Amino acid sequence: MTKVAVQFTLNDEEQNEFVDSGSTLLAVLRGKLGLYSTKAGCHQGSCGACTVIIDGEPRLSCLTLAQRCTGRMITTIEGLTRDGALHPLQQAFMEGFAAQCGFCTPGMILAAKSLLDRNQSPSRDDVIDAISGNICRCTGYEPIIAAVLAAAEQMRAEMKKSA
Amino acid sequence: MAKKRGRGMAAVNYPTGMNLGGDPSQALVHATTTGSFIVTLSSVDLGQGLKTVMAQICAETLGVPTENVIIDTADTDTGPHCMGTFASRGTHRIGNAIIMAAKEAKSVMLEVAAEELEVDSGDLQTDGAGNIHVKGSPQKSISVFNTALAAHFKHGKTISGRGIFLQPRSYPEPETGKMTPATCYAHACTVAEVEVDTETGEVRVLSLKSAYEVGRALNPRMVEQQIIGGAWMGLSHALYETTEPYYPDRSHGPVDFNQYLMPGPGDLPEFENVVIERPAADGPYGAKGVGEMTANSPIPAIANAIFDAVGVRVDSLPITPEKVLRGIQALNARAPY
Ligand code: FES
Ligand code: FES
Image (cartoon, rainbow over all chains, first blue to last red; front, side, top):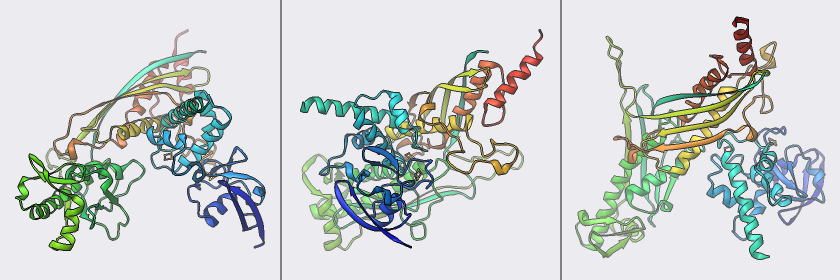
């Protein structure tokens, strides 16, 4: 198969890879870079488990060709933890018992992060809207919605403190 | 054409475990050289939190911190036997097996500690924080860490234990059919409130309020997780899930997440739960199984609420708008003008 060069920023690090042309970003993240936290639930854009953030937008990595990522900034859940400190969303998911099997969790958190990055005071409906492309089969969604709202509150409080 | 509200309730008695050829689970516990405890199981954590609760049970029995317990569920070929993670049996069956194994391991640990401290092992107790000391005189103590080291390198002992919980098979009495299929039952009751659109037949569940009697909630937040996740699943069974919603034939059935419908985050009712604790005599620290029953009572409660709202009794699942609408039409056709 033809190989193509791709170059993107992944969690603040420059990546240069030769990948099979036509391979998805999901396949590159899991298969080549060994970042297994990006989950593969359906490979067809209907579960949201493979959600990553590309240039600030939540994107389904199973439907994104790796080739199209050249020059882009990509965030996976590995990129959320800074110096061992959890992101407020990760902390809120943990404290709010918002994960059971955890399969949907990375995608949920990244979908929520891109919401909170552009809207610091989301309503419950905003949160529902932001995670409506992500399927969870364990939690009944309620703890996830509550955790995202709790993280938003926490982030607002932190901003006030540092302001 | 209107939106009509109704309220329904349903209760469930749910057996913990099952009764086929007997219902056993085994556990093995051993200490590492540095006093961590490994619990070897063939049981599987499905995401419900089995590993967390098993670590709690082992730690409680040994009297060591939960962080010092590692649950290994690696391999059903090489691990001790387990019937499996189903029938809401995990906490109860496997938990009891772990208590038995941990008790045996603890007695070896205390024997070694007794020799090190030159006291009688019957006078020793663990403090839950990683130390063993003489009852009533906490200054005469040795750490679990040093006890494990001594066992391995001085005394030539393994700090280990074996455990099994077996619920023996129950045979029915030929005359009466009477039997004892399970030893403990959890109980729950759900009240559902719905709103039915009489024009479209659509049902919206407004709230699911449940009370659960679970023996003892070993991990209260995880019990709550099960209850909310289960209520959502019950709602899903009641109104959404089917492999055959399409016409005219089977080949049009759903094959993926897009077509096999379940409620999303925008379809949630208000959830409210109360947990009642009445420790079960044969449960590990009083616990019963709470897993599967959480998806049970919401279903008939929703069906009853629909009947209360519009007088339509739907007796097959899921209760689709079509079934509700046909029911309403049949009622209207019967009604005298
Ligand atoms: S794996 Fe990408 S949406 Fe399911
Ligand atoms: S926690 Fe299991 S799918 Fe969401």
